[in-house]
Length: 142
Length: 235
Image (cartoon, rainbow over all chains, first blue to last red):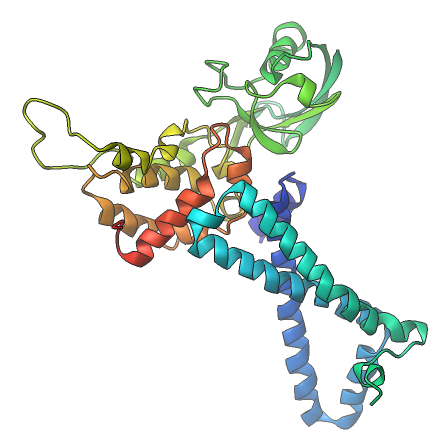
């Protein structure tokens, strides 16, 4: 545990470049996904325990802090997905993609793609906090 | 120009843990960081301890973390570092004193990949083992390594697990795996295929960013991974 904490601290304090920050965000996103998966299994399990406790869980999910968490999670999911593609390219075609120039280009593409997907979904997710319902069903007039 | 060196110090005879000390020195813009450290040691505090030898980026003795990133103190100029410079020992290896770390774990990983030519065939009687230009080109990049440990000690996988063989050892393995004269390709690929071998690379690129010899380390690691998957280096 101590070595894990030490290595996290080293990761935060080392001034690497894009690859370093891509790695950190990839890890953070992965941990967020695992945490959400755990929560998801838990809330489905609670349906069997009782309706009240399940309703309580839903109430938490619809609270403002939970929506901010979901927004952060969305960023993690999108970044994890697109960065995963970058890693696959680097791993399987090292002769083409494993050089610093290509690495920087790929990282920029990952960031742009992440933001393209993240920004609209983040707006839809947090809009209810400000009293605006932008659910997809509303957008398409359903 | 006057700069402040913020140095992480540790004296095992006096200190329980590392601490920061600041020293102000006058330097020329084109001085190396090593020159600035020498000024501190020679005129300010003789107990400051660090390794250095050739002072020209060849011996690889003076690797340290400079402004948060691995560098050779003799290959970085003061004008590129700003007025306040932080200097720490490289990470992931036990600190002996100040910038001096125990390099034995690093060299143990290096020895583990058998970094020497293995060929039991009789060499030609009248000449050396010849190799085509193309065959020599195949591993040219990885012959440049000076074993400074900048790459291995900038690798998050190595920080997390010191048993990981590390980028420097993989570079050395690559140098022989792709040498057409070497006969121990499968032996080395087996070592690389270990749980502490090449698969722990997370393509973070810290090693490539800080390599003072500008070796394409992640590419070399990727080529070793592919050689394992393909069962050899053919093609």
